[in-house]
Length: 196
Length: 135
Image (cartoon, rainbow over all chains, first blue to last red; front, side, top):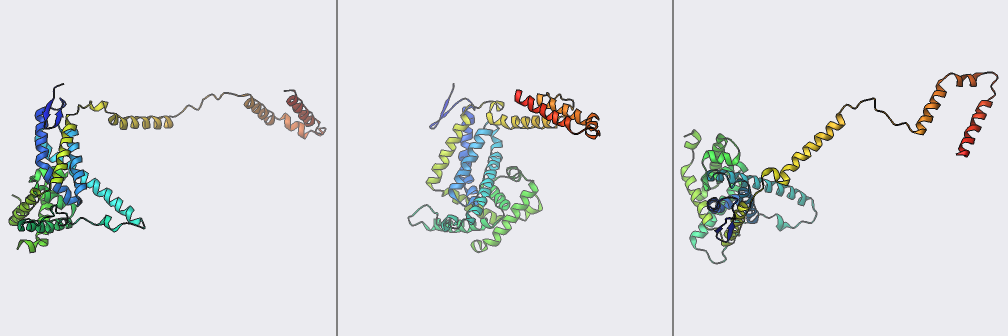
C-alpha cells in the first residue's frame, strides 16, 4: 500500500498525497478564521473549537475528493450547520436548566472577550487597543441577527465573494447583499464612538 | 455593481476587516495547538480507506427500514380473501350441531306440544351427564 508522510501523519492511498497536502494547506489557511467566525456565533472558545473540528472532519470524510476550489464554500456550509446545531442544543439546554431550582449562576455567564485575553503580562498599548476595539466589535456582532452576523464574518474576515457566501449560507445572492448591507449599517451605528 | 454595494461604507468595512484580521493574528497558542490537532485528525480521516457507499452499514439502514415499513403496510392493507377456511375443531363442530337443533322446528314442537311434560329435556340432560362421566 503506497503511503506518504505528511508531518507526523501517515497518508494512505484513499486520496492521493497531493490531495492530502492540498487539503492540509486549505485547512491550515481557514482554521483560524473559521475559529473566529464560530467564536463570534457561539461566544465560547471550546464550543467554537469543537465546531471547527467537526467541520474539518466532515469535510475530510465526505468531500476530500472534490475539487479544491469547492472546499471553501462546502467547509463554511458545514461549519454553519454545525454552529446552528450547537445553538439549538444550547437553547434547549438553557430551557431545561432554567426549570431546575438550583442552578449555578456562573454556568450561564457569557465569557467576557477581554477577560479571556490569553496573556497575564502587561500588554503593549497596541494590543490593549486592539483588545478593546475587538471587545466592542464582538459585543456589536452579538447584537446582530444571526444571518447578518454570518454574512458579515464570511465576507469581511474570510473574504468570500457574494456567490461563495450565498453557497455557504444556502441562500440567494440578493439575500447576502441585503444582510451584509444591514450588518454594516448596524455596526456603524453601534461602533460609532470607536470609529470617529 | 448593485445599488446596495455602492452604498457600503467602505472605510468602516476596511477598518473592521483590519481589526478582525489582527484578532486572528493574535489567537493564542492553546487554540492554535488544538486547531492543529484537529487538522491532523481530519487529514488522517481523509486518508482512511473508504468502503463503497452501498456497503456502509448506516447508509443501508434507512432504506431497509423504509422497505420493511412498506411491506408491513402492504400486508395489513392487502385485501384478504373472505373464503378463508377456518379449521373446524371438535367443539366448534358441536356448536354447529347445537345451532342446527335450535334453528329447526322440531325443538319448538317438543316445547309447545300439549302432551310434553318436559320429559324429553330431562332425558337429554341425563344423556349429557352420562356422556361426561363415561369420557
